Amino acid sequence: MSKSTRVQFPEIIRDPALEVNSDIEGLRGYMFEAPNGSQIVFWECDNKIEVKPHKHDFDEYCLVVEGRCIETLEGKTTILNKGDEIVIPASRIHWAVTGPNYRAIDYFGGKRFKYKNQH
Image (tube, rainbow, N blue to C red; front, side):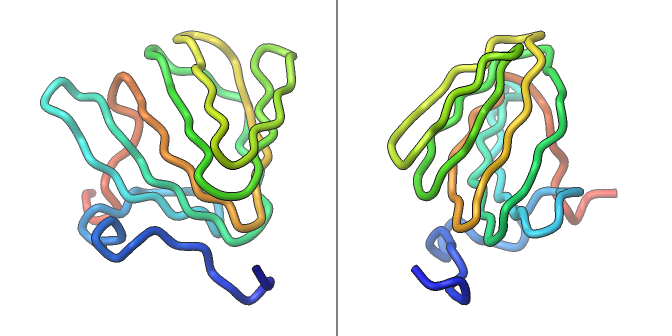
C-alpha cells in the first residue's frame, strides 16, 4: 500500500452522519450505538498517531483490521497486527501508537464519543 493510498472501510460504514468527534488529526471514526449506551467505532488512520494515556469506566475491546497498533496497558506493551485483538479492562490506564494505514474496530462498554454533527 503506497503512502498516497487512504485506508478506508466500505462506504456503508463511512456515513457522514456516523462520524465521531476526534481531536487526533488523521484519525476518523464511524460509530454505532446500542440502546444500553455501548458503542462500536470503526477507526481509520492514514498517518502515525499517538493516543495519550487515559482510562474508561467500562471495558474496551479492540480488533486490528489493517496495520499495526502498539498498545501499552499499565506499563505492559503489546504489539497488535492485523487480526490481533485486546481487551482493556475498566479503570486501567492505557495509551497507543498506531499507523500509518491503520484500521480497527473498537467496542466500548459505555458512552465514550459523540457524533461529529452533535453539539
